[in-house]
Length: 184
Figure 1 (cartoon, rainbow, N blue to C red):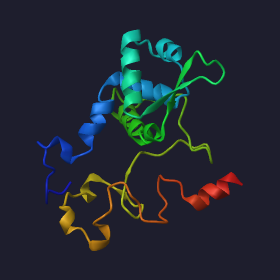
Figure 2: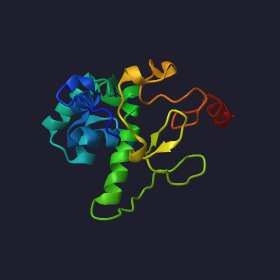
Figure 3: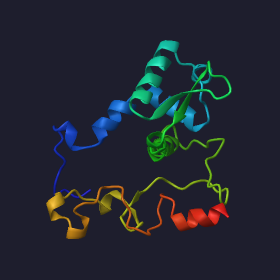
Figure 4: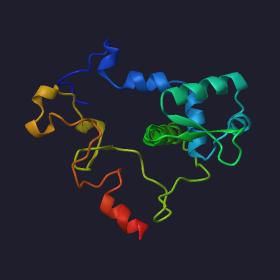
């Protein structure tokens, strides 16, 4: 990464990372999120599948609900049971979860071949690596990155946030035309 400018590291509010770590910064929250992505919805399912202590599970589920990652709703089939469902905010954590999974597969005790394999539903091929995309969809490496003051951005970029693609750019966000074709 270039060194034109650095983030103010002492100011915890100058970056979204501390807020994200406040919500997700410990192992059990990630494991519950992973279980949610795998279709678990009920307290007892999380308890038996994860091998987590009941009090820790209750605490972590409560925090994930409080932070809007999961919704807590009555089970439509049995109103006495509660379901925990991922919210849009929760689904937005999928790329981060996948990046951590891919990092673990690559660097922890050598390559780990997972089974089952996460695939693209369209062609059933394993998903590629999570990547940093430029505003126009190009894949970037750490050598392509730099920190700059917002004031030095081009005028058309001053109101844009990190994570936004140019309109019409194909990236990890569904292109509405492609989604319409897929629905047919």
